[in-house]
Picture 1 (cartoon, one colour):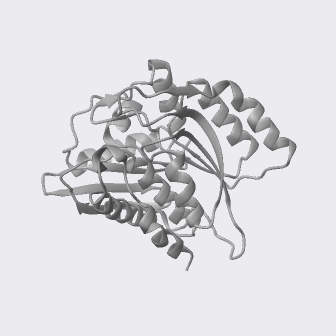
Picture 2: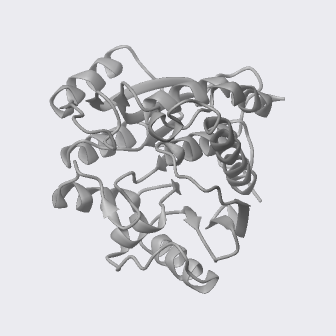
Length: 285
């Protein structure tokens, strides 16, 4: 199994993190920055929107940053910023997909990681218009690493979401279809087989078809998808294979969910990963 990023011993890789910034609820840039920084990466945020809290709370506020991003990135060009990976997640408008593609053009050798954050449990997030959903599905085709959940995979492929409990043969079919659309490596998250486990599957140019499993916990938390993708990229940028990175991310996310349950109001607060950041730093050993 080959690695997708060859880490040089003393070099600190630089990642453009194209995500929203959420004031309360621990997701998006609030997860990506500390997790990737702990892996010895220089995280350069490209904020796609500003949120008061995650959208599971009533009365949240969002500010769309689309209009500032072209000038923001042009200023990077003016000071010679170099990028080793482009990691995108939640987007605020369909025009932001064009902005991400402009980043790809400016940094053609950068690793392209797309977490198509737009839906879960069969429902599209409330800020996503049909135009934005379509644009996100197109962006998924450009990914070196694509990390959808089952709902997002169904949307990208134009299929009906049939629930989280699907057979492995269907998992293979979904990943094959995503790869046929252009994604080079796919990590499909959050599958259930009625065995009390959460299954994740990875398959692509860099790895054979591999499965990871973790016990299914009796609660759901906001931000676990962001944490999974960020931990996975942290491991990739530390020189791990994609299979190793997927297993690490699954274990790290499961451990963080256990820590979270010990916090007050944990089901609203978001996933608590902070005490575990030492495990991310250990990737560099």
